[in-house]
Image (cartoon, rainbow, N blue to C red):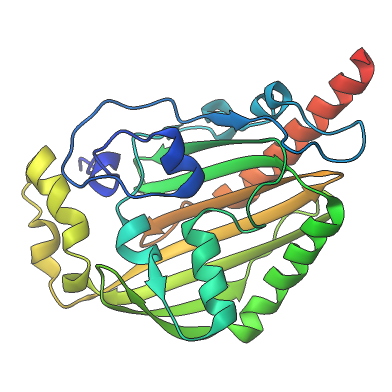
Length: 278
């Protein structure tokens, strides 16, 4: 059976650097070619110590489709659920901080040094993965990791009001990660709402790509729809990697763990080569 293309769950607009770094919205229904999904910034201000990543090193440390394996490919655009679901409000301060961090793709807070970011799509599972390498002071990263560890207790279940998808019931649980790096924390976050409140997220795809005879969103009006996210952050010396993977429904199995393990190895190799060349 032919699977729907990944673009059914991806925004049809071109993914620009600002969208990758700030998760700002793209305009629904606007067509465009795939953009380069990679962006970098040099340290400003520079972190203390001589081992901080350069912009070129951070870019080299990013994952590639070859690291992830098939069917992952460079992203075609920001998923519509970023604005449709992740832009949300709640009355619980820690939970609002979590929502803001996930929407901005900054689970460790805003980068203060060098960083590089890229994105990938999995058309088989209609999933999207966003990956970042950044330099931050170890103490700052460890404080952020400690905060992330508290969230399954402080924000285990809460309600959030989204901009386009109505009220979502949110559940936050811990996520086991490979024993890599100098500190790590993972979260699984699910947003559950009614499919008719998410219909706007699909309309632009039907308008742009056309219907494939499956009825689109209208065929399941009123059914519960779940967005599943996995968020992971790992400190590696004076640097860190973060990852956010999401899909409407089930996520590809083991993708987060594999990406984290591969990413830590790439970052470690970059530092090893830099020391050898010094």
